[in-house]
Length: 437
Ligand code: GUN
Ligand code: ZN
Image (cartoon, rainbow, N blue to C red; front, side, top):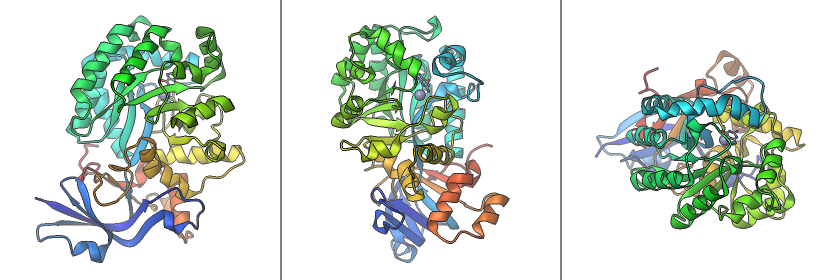
């Protein structure tokens, strides 16, 4: 049995940090150790204490002076959009029709799906993200390709093939029955295989007929332990079109409510223009609102009101995500930098401890997987990122004047990207240095 002992400055969150002085919300070790065995963290704490538990064969890796954090988690991202990221000049519905749907038709070709799945997970690892919640294309083969690649790398990923049966080109449409059958087959083959988890994925109300929404509700009833992901209240034209397609519905959220799609494992991308009633419905059901700042800015969709959602009488559970390719960067650091600015435009602040909580433990809690990932606690999976806040000349210069951990984290978020990610461990195995460049 081989074991690995990592040494560095370790940081892991215990709960939401109320303020920058809320020290009991995190555990920080200036000289920390992580002992890893069989893909899990078996001991964590001060290096001197953890080292005592190592044996003669333990491989020691010294990452000082870098920071060791739990691997980042991206809770909403589209695998088949890698080649349309950075497509110019459209709001949501035009962007989908002009770029996204035509691009996704290419995934009928299984070989293309395998190539993109491989490059997608390479890119995630390069940016320090060890878990994603992913939308594959409508084609069953695209989800198979994604899960096969993820399983081979022993990554904990959550994904689903999108179900969509109207308002898009023929090449990206299924039917209520084929969407149901393909989803059932994918669940049977992949859910719970190694670290793979399946998410039921009706793309959004506009591209699913009422019959398909019924089928999505049936899938949820049949598999109540699975995640469900979709889009909600991203853009005004989208909201108006949804109202036209579901004239009986009091609002957008009620469409999903009516088909039984709200709940603790339900992830709703965007949630920008919610009414109080809709926010109450999400809160009452324990549903998760996913904040996608780079995408919301890029598509001109609007400003997600993070602090209002957290602080209202009935708070929302919130996750953060890139939403590539509506989103403009693979990095969760770039995402939180833009998130900070969106929150600032709403007249609020998100402090650096809150940001790093969000992309590690916060996202893990939003996905109900904090017992496995999102912290450095003993017993959890060894998905770890190694960060260097002096990775570029400009960062190195700024670090000369940084005196606190909070300043260092904020610098990592504000100037950092894949260059600050020195190493990534996936289930205890070095994955970034191992990757062909
Ligand atoms: N709504 C429905 N599909 C999509 C998508 O692919 N990206 C975004 N940003 N919104 C959507
Ligand atoms: Zn999306």
